[in-house]
Length: 635
Ligand code: F6R
Image 1 (cartoon, rainbow, N blue to C red):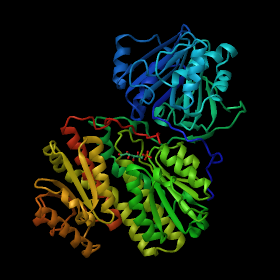
Image 2 (cartoon, protein in one colour; image 1 turned 45 degrees about the vertical axis):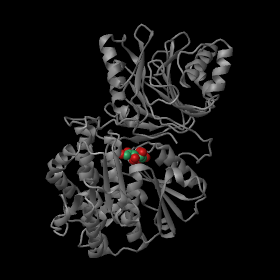
Image 3 (tube, protein in one colour; image 1 turned 135 degrees about the vertical axis):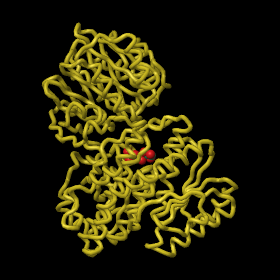
Image 4 (tube, protein in one colour; image 1 turned 120 degrees about the vertical axis):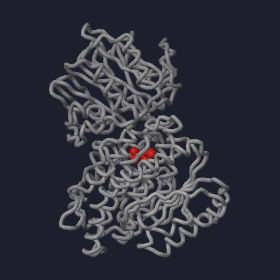
């Protein structure tokens, strides 16, 4: 592909694990505590079991505060007794791996007589050996974390070299595993040093100030100018300069990019939750993903310019992703096969590379990831690169690792998604896949101009139709969710593209309301799952339009009759005017008429609202469900 954005060779690395934590760093002239806390609030989706900050104050002393619990606990502690403020600092929000979520295990970790503070996202795999070595030399530890070992090593090296960047170089070369490390030392105020291996880090460039973050959400309210940091690089930021070197100390040129996210879009802005806001933003997410990619009734994706030969030459597509993104992939399979006439397989990223898939130079591996940092998906992309496939990522986060590791990227423009449960990114992913299918179909000559124009008209009508579902069904579905707060299990049935939506409806409910939910292909029902149906069992059924396939529609209606006869409480999602479902449905949720491949973008909306309403009725935190973090950067 002409859009060759891979910034470095795909390297074969040791298997690494990386937990998800949020990291922010600041140097400048403004009070650093506010900037760090605001950055952490935006990164809290990455982990929220403890948080901490370290600041070098104006008298040149290092102050540190950390607290178990959500960021609120740290804020409250600082409100009770603030740290002396300064203009250099680092902050961390944690998702525990080594050591439980306690104050002691929270980051930052201190060393060099508490003059140095270090934070870490990742897992240091050789930490036990390093800790034993340090303990033998007399170092004592205050936590159970692997991170404190890195802090202690850095303290030793700083005492030896008197230079934080140099000390960093010595330390990172001794660490194995995955890490983003940020550190400050009170003897070098006005400096934050960072390093990255298999874990995300981006730089934000300000006027007289600079930022570091796990992703651009950490600093997007201050600057949209950013630099991507490559693997195995060390970064130093001062108020006026940014330097990037490799682990050997050779200067490297980081890749600049502009962040297109509107900072206001990462704020809750009066909505009860980020999830509610993000569900409401779906018309915009779809419209923004289409924007600039339709010309004269045809889809032309500018990022794929120059890749026509590649699209003509591929004989197979594998779409790889995890969770919600993998359900978008399933919808994408239908679209690519229909329009581009190429066989498509969907592979969960964590299964893909543990077998011996048939991949060659004519295989296109499409990865889908909202965060662009999901470790399973990243490893699948690296594996595909190693096996000689062409790789294309569909991603929502600029500067993220997965697009950097891929030959090309098609960004979804859903804006920052903060709630852990994915909603607007999902509809944007499906939109990007529909665009990709039409683009590839045009290039391969497998979709007629008339069919393409009809599909484009359908695409362009989607935002208004999603808005209609939101305005017409929000109250009704919210009421249903409230009524069903005590329900212990909900089933979801769909066929064709309704099947992945049934899976997505079940996943949304599981993750935010903690009740048992399962999605099935409706045709599979009598091969086993129908045994689950007992009187009162709620079942959502996604009914395909009779206008597209009378046969498929009739089959789903007969599935409804089968479950109804066994006492199921049937909640139907069907298009306007479909009267065939009325005699058998306890509740009917209506969606506007749309083409078969476009219905998923409408049908998923009531399922998202239902999950949110039920979880809210149970008094749960819909944005930060238990045990989950947004970026699953652990294999
Ligand atoms: C569910 C959800 C997850 C993610 C999955 C992949 O609501 O958000 O299932 O879809 O972890 O994440 P990304 O898209 O960031 O690779």
